[in-house]
Image (cartoon, rainbow, N blue to C red; front, side, top):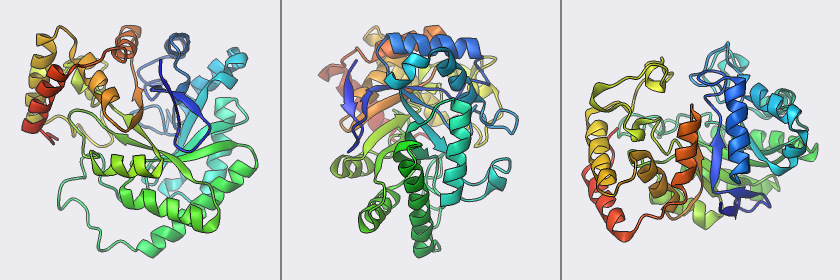
Length: 350
């Protein structure tokens, strides 16, 4: 296992982060316990969750994943100090979470308290904003014409950001969170938070968590360069594109109990003809080198310059074992060249 410092923080995290969003929906408490036990035994010390989990989000499962992690901590009290625990406050749009309202400083303070109670801990190591108050080009909204930027009130957004930073500062001063980070953000959002932090002597964002995989690498190179140069750790979520890069949805397959078999908040936006063509091509490369498609996708992601840690998730122990093992694989120049050839054919398939 490799370990890196998370941005400018003193948090030393594994280059594999254990994601948890299926716990409470596709996975039970007992299954989550086994995943946590195995991951920790393998040297993973970084666990990511969120108040809105389990996924797909519903009012009934809101907070369930944090509760499951809290139950594990309660039975493994000695392990809390060895885990770098990350959680997130949900953004706007979910009516059962603060009436669907924007993130505010006051919302941060109350959400942190609620998460701490569910997690059965006194502090959260990394507290992240799950998505910004303004619309951002994520979840297939990155195509030209999907968003308008000229109508956004930048000053109003900055005011909200400053209020949020003050809320985060309140939590940090109380010892309830150690560091803060972003998710589903853009270069403007990153840099505006950094500017406000510096100008007002407020907590500095140490990380950014965005989707990054062979089917969706829009952050390369500009967002990732921004992060590297600003010392903001880039955390890649969905390195398997919601499971698509395992090949399990090839040829129209829709296995029962899988993510795509469930109603999705943002729809099956990865389920496109070009995505399936790209997946088939990547599988061809993997087959030629006698590795699984999932191993190829994860190893590629982990080798990309600027990726600090990759967030993996699994619904079975077999998947988790395969995923963790993939990070011990080094893709040589030949296979990287073959992957790039496919990527150039399908640079943005969904």
